Image (cartoon, rainbow, N blue to C red; front, side):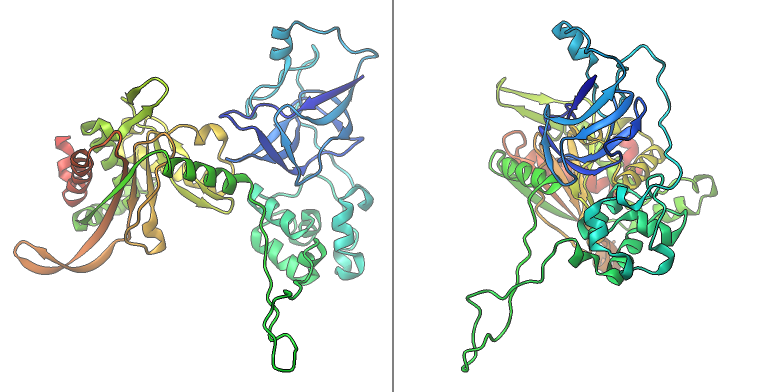
Amino acid sequence: MIAEFRLPDLGEGLTEAEVVQWLVQPGDAVALNQTLAEVETAKAVVELPSPYEGRVASLHADAGETVAVGAPLIAFDVAGDEPDAPAAPEAEEKAQPNLVGYGAAPASGSRPARRARRGGPVPVAAADAEVLVAAPHDALPPSVAEPAVGERPRSTPPVRAHAKRLGVDLALVAAEVGDRVITRDDVDAYAERVGASRAAGQAAPEPMTNAPVTPTGEPAAQRSQTRIPIKGVRKHTAQAMVHSAFTAPHVTTFHTVDVTATMELIDQLKADRSLSEHRIGPLVLIAKAVTLALGRNPSLNATWDESAGEIVQNHFVDLGIAAATERGLIVPIIRDAERLSLTGMADALTQLTQTARAGRTSPAELAGGTFSITNIGVFGIDAGTPILPPGQSGILAVGAVRRQPWEHRGEIALRQMMTLSLSFDHRLVDGAEGARFLKDVADILEQPGRALLF
């Protein structure tokens, strides 16, 4: 019988997802929980597991197409002559696959099978026809003119998305690089050699009709434009920032801090061999200082509940760390950050960064958050006016550390200075409360030993 799999609810109010790439094609045999496709929501790239064991009958969406939650995504030819009798609504709901990342409920009583590995050569005709047209065999070196496409080439979701934008077939790149993980540089090098960007459908820019002309009547220059679809993380970020900017009255206050003692402490911790497995940098100490200061200033760790007419003060800190990735800005969360030791905070930040760079941050890891930190200092910026993530009452921007003359113990000395920029929701936080919080963070960074008094 034919069974349809509809795009499941990916959680957190997400209503649609874009198909990044299919990992199966019509006619392929699939096992239960085998990954069918990678889809990109407004928050993350996730893998969709198969809820059925059978054979792929048809695909209802092409790569690059946006599909609404609940819309048909793929059809399977599964064992059985007739469809099962309709189940009660409750039972039918339980039979549907749950949130992505938690597996799928078996469609039969059979024991779940491991993900099938497809080995052996597959004809080139089974690959993406558009890519093969874009990169004809005579444009390739003889060594890769007839690749054997077997298992999915080893690469990360951002690299696969980058290859898709350029129209590069990763199977062809894998034939060149061998068994190692394909990098973005590998894709760029391949695209530059075979002209994949033009073959992917990016036509040469045409001169605009209103271009300036010379006295002879000929165009003085050809001007072009690039149009980028607003979707994915960029679309979600834009909607969230507009909502936040026009909902919460923002106030930003600044404070320049002498962090010389903090930087000296970091050097001492890095020199300690017993801590060599932990990456302790300035952001780790700042995150720890923030969690301590929030304990003394709960209004910065609160939410404005308009519908209930209440201010909700949180007695835990779900700390958001803004991360710039190839897909755009995301803010993954460190849960219960106030409970972490300094080394625990360092490990959590390291894991968060590695996951974000690999494009593996899940929607659940981006949900919620009670306060956020954005490190603009890594770009050499001193200060800014960050916009609050929706639902949060405060966000701290951390500037670059710079050596500059500063008054120290009655004399002018070269000190290591940093500017902190705090934006807060003036509905929940008065100016005095925002100033006290910022001063508490600064006190710890100026004299780390003061953390013992918090």
